[in-house]
Image (tube, rainbow, N blue to C red; front, side):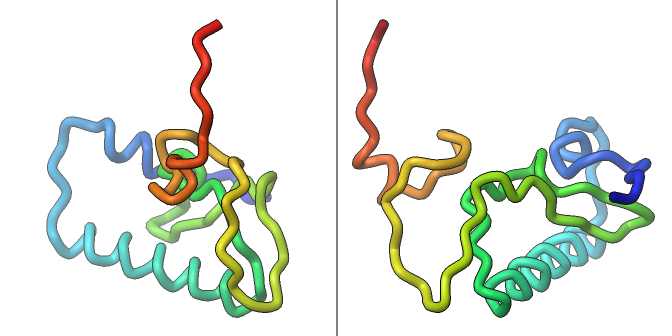
Length: 100
């Protein structure tokens, strides 16, 4: 893996500086293109979040495929994998919460 000196999207979000609209559009475009490539290859990431997107010289790199699965076609999955705060609502409705 390459060293990504610019950090993650999470780090970029936490910086107090406002980003220009052009840069935000570029980031979103790269993210959508990257995710589209994963879909074309039949990869479902299951844990896409700001901390799992690295930046190197303005280029985004999607990382952490620990919960990723291969799928020939999209089948909705209610498996509870990934980071709770980033789970889609349909998965959250099936999550059981317990206070220990």
